[in-house]
Image 1: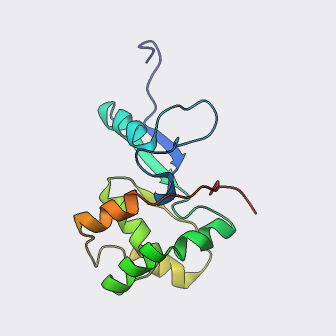
Image 2: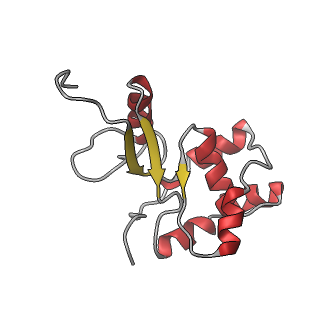
Image 3: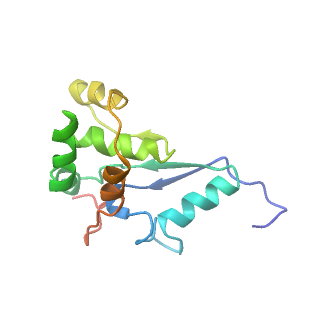
Length: 138
């Protein structure tokens, strides 16, 4: 870090369970850190790590929300897989900002605190992986 420059207060990065915390680069381009490393860096420097596109985008968002492990966890808690993803992200201390035009989904996105994911469930979600790029606009 160049001490002559001010640090940002927020680092907004595409982040979803498919990025994983320790496997994949968190963003594209010149970033070399995994998401876990980038999140830790932000915490150490009092920078808010803000994850956008928590479900990916385009058709890949549909694929993620139908991910069998997420669906299984959601059924256990009687919630949607989208709520599971948002709850997981929030449990990591990462602000969530899902996008939807649907009033039903807006209400659902606000109701992510009525259940608690177990440590095991959080681990399962953190280890999800996709070989496809999930932020492509299809």
